[in-house]
Image (cartoon, rainbow, N blue to C red; front, side):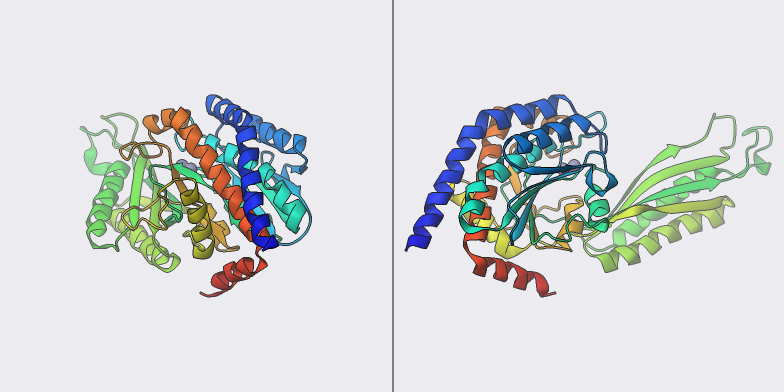
Length: 393
Ligand SMILES: [Zn+2]
Ligand SMILES: [Zn+2]
């Protein structure tokens, strides 16, 4: 009985601690929102977050994994080591249109609030600052450099348009393509030209045809970054950036080859020479730990949210949290801060990420994260269950 009383008391304590932090968390979130920094340039955001954690009794290591804006804050030393991940990068031109300012504030708030649970039951809480989520796969780099080697469980929350405890995220890889042709006067001597732009357009057409016959939820999308110099010169060079995504790693491999075949075909047809390079970072699909997701969902429900376990109608894009989820049991729940029509990566979502409604959702998500830490450190058998689920393929 004493034990269950402890649990309820601790959860109440954690919630009131977050209410006490509320003004500072809002201030942090808004400050990051109004100072948007691109991936790996988040010097202000990472130092504000690290300072906040240090001031609240965490031990800080800055610039971990040879990334200047990454950090690791820890409280306690024992097992389980539970990591809460903070993202804080913004998008080019759109600012905080993915709401990472809210992720950052919730991570530090939950970490600080969970301290009494560590004091009471042992274990340790880590708040890991993971920069460069958009485009650069910061967590994938950090995973390769050992950032999660001693972590037992990893959690974060991401703002969105639904309350969902699991996230569908696709495996993905970027692709840079160039065609090299032969310049010529487009009217006077077109017969000696080799048109690199036409090669690119044919590749797009081939990909568009391919798209009819690919598996559900796979995605291929791209832009042309060089399409020639002038209308009266046969383009000698063209370039494009593409992203290929699939629901699992095996199909991503298959699809990558099919996409490359489209470019090879276009090169053959046009006579242009093809060069391509796959991105160094490959995002892996999100593996949601359902034991963890259920705990988080129950805690959100106890705060009055209609948090569902999954929403099969929607696919997320891709996230580098997927790479973390392949190494340690993880969750990446979504918390609604905007209306259904205002998804992430839009100017509307950037506005929503600074709204009062977002702030309220942020507080609840922060509470649910910290309450989930309480559940885990107070119940070693749940941690075992989380790990058993993770071991099963
Ligand atoms: Zn994003
Ligand atoms: Zn995001």
